[in-house]
Length: 230
Image (cartoon, rainbow, N blue to C red):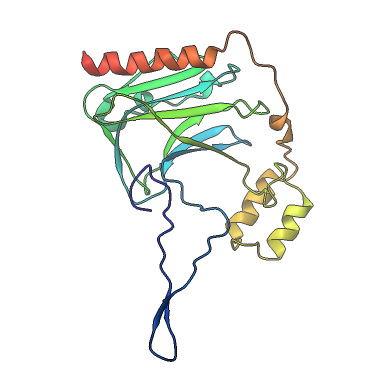
């Protein structure tokens, strides 16, 4: 990983020396998928609806704005805990009116630092049981176009990744977990969410007409840029 927004590189070089003293370039074969997420990640807890923003790399960034959209209009606006409401950075954030298909905020004066040690909660904006259609974009300081963030849905205690918490997950915990070790805290997550079935959120919903997500995003971009220029 060489910079924020860039994918993990494949730059490992393997050189070995033969018995006669010659250096030989070996082959390096990459397998699996990188876990490095070189962008701002919005983690959504499907059991509580809470969304949390965090950079997972050492490359801290200055953020001026963000927008979250839902093509299906499934955002829980009542659960939104905006940066403006939280008073982040001395209350310099300005929140546009919450809508079921869009949430948007902009820094009125200055920026907010995002780094790997500071998660920012946006409250319970995900409607429980709804389709997972949230999109997250953000505006870096000095830029005029929104960048794509990454939305990751999680269910604490769901160790096998099938979006329900049951006895199979407990068996995985008993065996220590693989490939990532599991802890007493993970067991507490399992106990808290035991019996929760989030599979309903994987169901198919019909998309409304017209495609309101694109319209909302255009409005959000316009709002962000107008506020910065004024």
